Image (tube, rainbow over all chains, first blue to last red; front, side, top):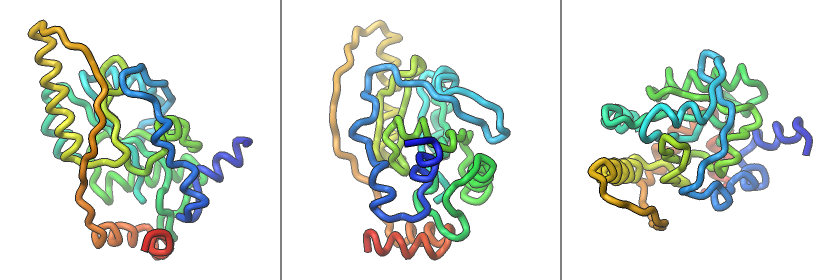
Length: 69
Length: 154
């Protein structure tokens, strides 16, 4: 899968199972108790940060994943 | 979730919202095609829906979201070493607060030099399911979002 295909598939344009079902992979998500992988992320002003920078800020960090829709 | 963020901030609990992709794209909030659009939708999450926690935006291809299971509204809790200690495939404030109370107690016990060893537990939690409120939310995205959800789940 090239990047253009990935962008199109991940940002699906219709809520139909053929399009959203492939992304529901919670069962294969990283395990508890082992250090999580790090990723680049962005603040709303466009400045770049890292997931690791966020979890390092506090004893515990709650991260809710979601969107407007 | 905003209230929990405020309630536990003084106990060194951080709370952020990570913006992913449009789960139910509609005419008003369609699927994402650019980072500029993604930032705009994320700002609307704050300005229209009132998410007051810091909002962090994932890449357009959702690299972080996909790694953590791609669920539309999940919650994870990390410790300061980057180790996830809680993951939930759906966000429920009661479940999150219950977990925070437990882990803050663990932190206190460690500070008291109690010797603790981690173990795994599975538990089925329960969330409120207000279908009417959910449909009102879908209407904000556009009628297409409502139609597609009804066709998928009735």
